[in-house]
Amino acid sequence: MCVELSLQGFRIVGSQYNEVNQQLFSQYYETIYGLLDSQSVEYRSTFFETLSNKLLNLRRHSDEDTSDDQMDTK
Image (cartoon, rainbow, N blue to C red):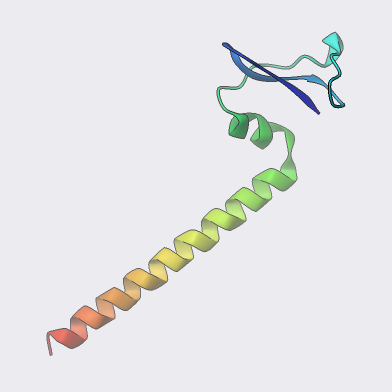
């Protein structure tokens, strides 16, 4: 995939490195993440899996802190 970066944002301009094909021009995206999210199911899946894991870890740490606080008050 060949991606153009301009003042308008990111957009796909080709299907291979250093290739420009006017028929493949797509809409502009504000961020590279927005472009990847729209074009890659694998990127989206990996992103949400990573986010979910981080949130679960955060919750576990929060639960541990809460149980530690309860022990301190006894």
